[in-house]
Amino acid sequence: MEDLTNVERAVELLQQLGLKEYEAKCFVALTQLPSGTAKHISEISEVPRTRVYDAVRVLETKGLVEIQHANPQRFRAVSIEEAAQTLRAEYESRTDSLRETLQGVEAATVEDEVDVSHEVWALSGSAAIATRTSQLIEEAEEEIVLVVGHELALTDGLVDQLESAQDRGVSVIVGTVSESLREDVRALLPGAEAFVSELGWLSSMAAADDDTEITRLLLIDRATILVSTAHSNAATKEESEQAVFGRGFDNGLVTIVRRLMATGLFPVDGPPSGAAGEGASSDAS
Amino acid sequence: MEDLTNVERAVELLQQLGLKEYEAKCFVALTQLPSGTAKHISEISEVPRTRVYDAVRVLETKGLVEIQHANPQRFRAVSIEEAAQTLRAEYESRTDSLRETLQGVEAATVEDEVDVSHEVWALSGSAAIATRTSQLIEEAEEEIVLVVGHELALTDGLVDQLESAQDRGVSVIVGTVSESLREDVRALLPGAEAFVSELGWLSSMAAADDDTEITRLLLIDRATILVSTAHSNAATKEESEQAVFGRGFDNGLVTIVRRLMATGLFPVDGPPSGAAGEGASSDAS
DNA sequence: AATCCGTTAACTCGATTAATCACAACACAA
DNA sequence: TTGTGTTGTGATTAATCGAGTTAACGGATT
Image (cartoon, rainbow over the protein chains, first blue to last red):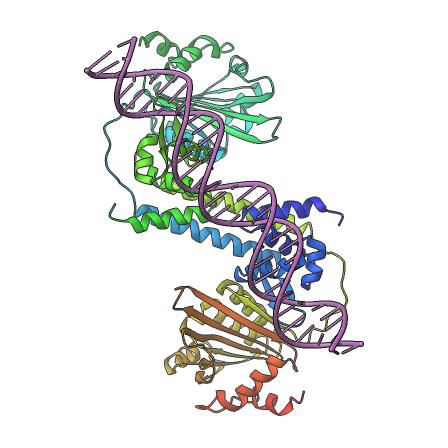
């Protein structure tokens, strides 16, 4: 009674996990009782009494409740821990099946060759962006320029990957937004160049009612770029991360960013070695 | 083309994982291509071309595809492995949140005391049944009588639990359907009584068009019983496991099963010690 | 028998989704 | 220029599904 918010959250989560509204509400109600009748459940869950039976029966087939076939019937939920495990196991087996099934599908009619040199791809979701970031870092052969616009963007995994890139002879240059973060980088990655950059020039792109900031800016071998932004919309209160990445030395996006980096990105310590300066002078598409 | 079935399976799985039909079909189509346009996707996925755009946009927000904003737009799916991980992670975080949220809910109005001695509960799903089985075994104080009607029912975990029950002084009696399985039990559980039982008397309960067999039959301290049956319906081709369990010495179900075990269940080696015989003579409800 | 309660099943309404259509912007060729 | 075809967006219709309600059945109680 005192925690309506928690109940609502739980109901919403259960629906996201595939339960219908009534099922979710009934289950949450049952977790609040050692056991209960349809009437009882209806009262605390606000589910029409006559529909409790359907809902609970479905829950039973999913292994989430047990039914006592008496008069009146009594219902009881399994433990929270067990319910969570049951649901998790269900989706885990589904993703596993999906993996197998999709691997047995692949390959369709091959389409014509596509010019890959001017591609600019958009993607969203922190996980997807992180994955792409590490893929790009791993394919670097000569140089990695990384500007982290937010503390959270510099994860342990990222540091490890940069380290192993250095080990195979790739030069790593890291820009940060703050002095303190630069010190961290210098401690974590001794072999890398570290500098403080100003990303203000890009923040001005953001719309007025949004709160957008750059989280990552990655340039691989001067020919592949990835820019990611965290976009927290004030209206919907949603946090989302978006990114674009482009391939090819004369790719439009790559060219622009290379030029921007050469001119306005490295004001404090000056442009690092040949990273951006050389690119700026050698792109004439 | 040659594996329509696989494609259909994948689409179905993706829908079970929360995607809409069009989204699922588009994604599967994209896994068959390095990249493709809306037209291309529409052709292999049978999704109306004009709807491909929406579907793919949703997929992008879920981190499953990347979009090239060109003319025409091009779309590309992330790797199968990455897609599976993304989906799995999504549901894992949801079950975790659920666990936490539910723990912050518990407890509602306490209802009147319920007479617990005649309860008979029904539950379904192998996982749920296995969990309940182990809970019952762990609460045993004196005696466990277990009849396994199917080889698969005797899992390693089950054996371990029976072993630890023996260690705390609980006598374990195991019935099997075959002589060979009995030998296995004798090897795995030296301290336990093992015998071959006949379960034919219960199989006759099954309806004609079904294929039902008893997988487990568990009697704890002569006062709690669990019977589980594997029910493979020929019509729907679905495999499901169901169970009932009851508590209390004079519980109707317990009484019946105790009596049945005393009379007709142990024909080969005779009834073990005092397990069922004593019960049969002492129940007068 | 009359009535109450528990239970099931059927039906309505509304929202979401699938499927189709119409249109504007653009490219290319005749 | 005109015609043709393609791309992308938006609106519209049709079908499906879930939520909410009502009716009907059967057993138990009085």
